[in-house]
Figure 1 (tube, rainbow over the protein chains, first blue to last red):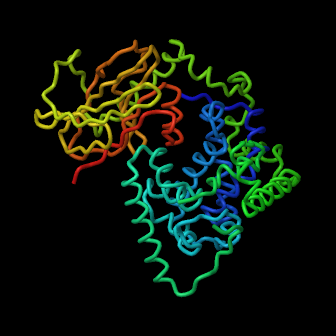
Figure 2 (cartoon, rainbow over the protein chains, first blue to last red; figure 1 turned 90 degrees about the vertical axis):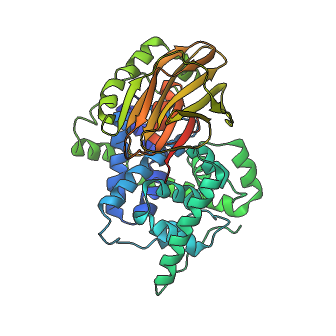
Figure 3 (spheres, each protein chain N blue to C red; figure 1 turned 45 degrees about the vertical axis):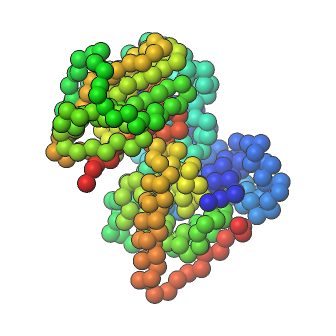
Length: 177
Length: 247
């Protein structure tokens, strides 16, 4: 079992990555209160069992995955509650994600709470991190074809949601493809 | 999908984990540079804000779960060395091994796990396997379905009553653990943490699926790396073969 982190390590991680982790939580949960709660829960997990981050090649990526799982759990718990904020503020900060439209990307993030556990992770990798299909396949241990199918399913759900929604907001992006 | 680095690599760069390849990209990509600069500004403002200071945050954690945030001298200071991860002492293995028994018991609700004779006789099986190979670790799943055995190394499709075991090939002596990690977080060990000598080894256990097979992955690798993967569900350090339910 992984060892946990001590106070000093937690403090160092928070100073270095706290802002980024909170941004990620805010993007996925669209609620300041939920995001702050998820951030705390993420660090409690690290205190209990976060020793793996010490030898991670990309600590921020490791931390993001822990934070994302925490957010997914919160999304499941808060499924019926309304989100207090739109995605615009947080999503507009994201780098450009080629291969998708801003609207589709935003909708894919908005429908996270109706996706299953694995599709949530794939959606974040594809639509938030902007990872390639191959990168996602390598990370999850699936074939690229499987990932393509899963992303197509997420797109279908996002597009259906988009069609059913009357008014759309515009997602401004920081950079072009 | 993208010629730009994934956003987490840009974020890492903005957080101070500078990566040469990202630096090269930023030098030629003004929008990415603007993104990273904006993140740096945000991070600086976050650090300067007393409400979000580390001290305040730790106080919140203590308030939320007092015991969790108490200063506990658990380990030496962070030393992110791969050498440490590769040491693989028996002591460390023993630490990992003690968790296997209760997890096995927990998993019994959906799995029947039982020892299989070893060594196993050569199998009359379909030999289509493209063995999964990672860091000189080769993993092949042998699926037994009504007496018909098939070697698999990409995706393993299972039906009720199928039985699986694994073959592990290593090119040098190393600590290894292999098990089935369910999507619901359960863990069924197929090979308890052990130092394997170079060669091919058969798992000491087989797993038989019940009437409602649980999907997940067969994970194999260094015990520390497998533990990390189970926490993060990132399988880049280990070998992972998906197990999916056959319709």
